[in-house]
Image (tube, rainbow, N blue to C red; front, side):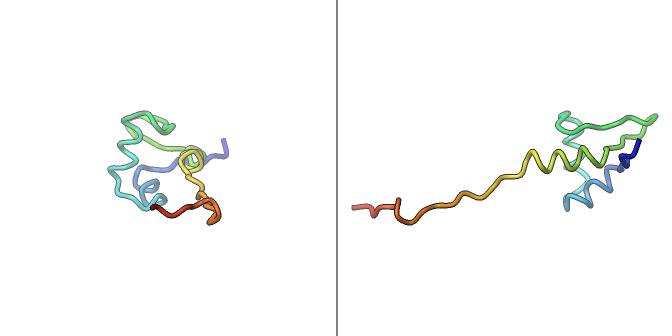
Amino acid sequence: MTDRLLTVEQVARLLGTTVRFPRRLIEERRITFVKVGRHVRIPESAVTAFVTANTVEPVTIRRSGLRRAA
């Protein structure tokens, strides 16, 4: 096992959010997590996969396709 298991606090710090956000992801089963006794840990790869899956690429708009409103 080479994947680090992160605490909820570490994930929040990594994502730049409050602790509430990763806890909500866990509650809604939107991110993979591991129960270690009564503790909850999130694999680092799951955080990377979550960020990748939710990354929105910018849309490029060509000026020639825009028209003025009358």
